[in-house]
Length: 534
Image (cartoon, rainbow, N blue to C red; front, side, top):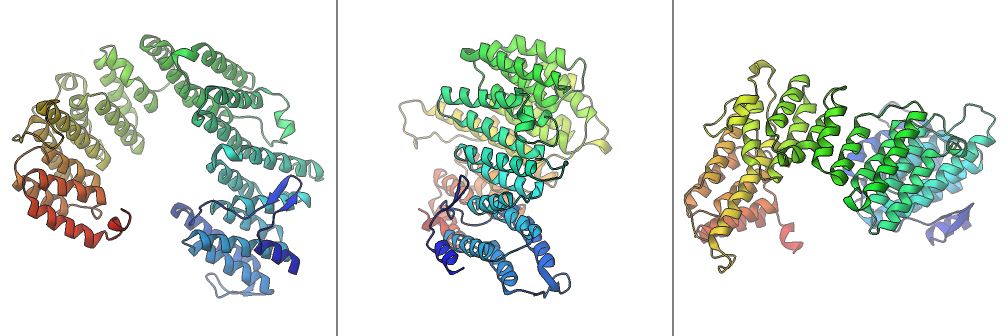
């Protein structure tokens, strides 16, 4: 027992059937905020499992000191805020798990907590020892470990495969005919291979990884090799379909089509129908390899027999606009709006507006926004939208989101910045701008901002930055002050450092340096860490 403790404290690796335990050396400073609630619930579940008495919420009493020490170490891990604290907790937990015997249910919970905290070495070590003792851990535990390894990228692909093979070997050694590896763990492994292919810096490595994933999905022995509980499903194929589409280009068009065809044939042989994700991958690859006309033909063929998919419309925005088929695009959006409700529609239209603004179609984006979400079109609304978008009953309308307003405001901010740069000309310096009165871009942005306030949508730092950037190209400090008062009265969060900088610049460029200094002092008081990080 003493030797094990010394080994843990000295961080000496211990090898177990291909795995060596080495405490985590990556910079895991704390458990991600979105994982903390899950970790806390898992610790509370472990408390109830190990306690001999005590009501929900404690205080608990334990039969052994090791049980109480383990719970204490896990809570310290939950509260750790630095790398050193996290590593100390990891070593403490590892010593306890090695020097004391805990039931399998307890080891599973510790494995899940370690995985959520990013301590993959500790979680892998626990899984390895369980498999050596022919104890098959729950899918929740090893799926959490697979996700932990996935978050660390391509460097963990070999370890992920080894985890699956160890689980498969454990399943074969048990006498339970129902013992098998959950398909979700295998799908996580395939997804990691595909993500590594997309992020690879070389084409040859990407091709090798794609072929490796294809080999896993096409092989008839995959289910037996990994002792899978279920047949391959759509979630097994979709990551590879998406990766092939992302890497598609005119230079690899033939190989892209070959890969997609092989995948679709394999899906068909397993009785799987291509879902929206698969169809969107085909569309994306066709746009990249064969151009707009081929993509439009494919789109019309696919959705002549199935309901419209919001993501597919987003993919087709650029091809349809490039081919001058704006009326068809508006009609697609109108039909999608009419056939769907709730977050599905708002999320889709946020993406549409962002794409339109990025393509320079901010006028079309604004007109669609007003017609679909404000129902009070301005005098500058696009005639194409007036004709195609039907009025909807106000009772069934959807509220505009803050993100929609921010996308449009950011678009007008960029538009005015570019207009100011073109007025300066190449011979002027960056700061030698020509002050201008309210421009059409500023007027449109003010209309949108006023609509945002009237709709009861609170503004955030992104909104403030966009509006202050617009004010930087005028000579009216009173306008900056007026806008700032309205923004402060409707802010949902405190100003971010970026928002403060935009306000300071707005006052500085409108020849109001004293106000810039006041805002600077306010930022230093409310955001003292800004100066420390410089």
